[in-house]
Image (cartoon, rainbow, N blue to C red; front, side, top):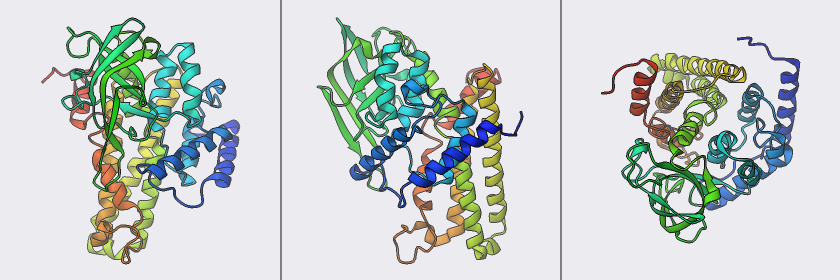
Length: 388
């Protein structure tokens, strides 16, 4: 792999850096898991789109710039360098968007992608059910064909961004006699449709980043089926590949955390003196973040050359989720008792947003498929080991 950037790539980096420096909000936006913060983040998505930066790797006609994955990685590096807000529509642009590119017809792409890029339509993810979490093949929510509609009944839970989102992408069982991954279909449903009820789930911090969604005879037009009826598992596995592998968690996110961790160590030398292993843990976090970045560049180069990402996306997910948690645990150790304070507390000092990041990192080994399940996938599909 050639680690040197081309002149075009260097010029792209300069352009992205200059735009972000001129447009990133001067103050951090309120949490996107609050109604006001959600609205503010939606406005930021709109501003990104107006500048042509909503999703740079998409075709121009859908709101992108048509650049390759290397330039997307460059943009992500500049995005995190500038301290830009989190992407409230990440389920749409990073997960559903690439899936639409692969499985959607021309009408679906033209209908759904431009408003997604512009922040007009914010998407929630609706896969998990009360008895089907990491095991998506256990889904029981049904969708029966009735003329030019499907009639949906059932429940989804832990639906990211669903409280204030506009649409949700889901997997439903369209063949009542099917079992496991057969007979599932992937559909796009407006959250204001008749018969849809959204119930917020309160997080540890009191905010509402998730919701339960109930479907009571909800009529979904057939043209909102993505892929073939009964072929939803294939579509969902493609989406899961983006979620676990390349798109959802760019390496720039963890490189930014690693840089913050190094700065935290420098600002708290007494903690490192009390526990010399903390310095080693900081160095390990920085090295792992850099290694993950290099591996992602390698994967992107392979995809540009016509390759694909398959079951190895499970290894990626295990690595970035456990790396993120380890770095935040190190930060908590460096801060000592102050780690439990909110940034606004009088004695907080330099605690920053480490507590919030730590709480979110705890979920990393669970969402996008638990790491136990990902290890099973890697064992069976990469190593050829027998099923347990």
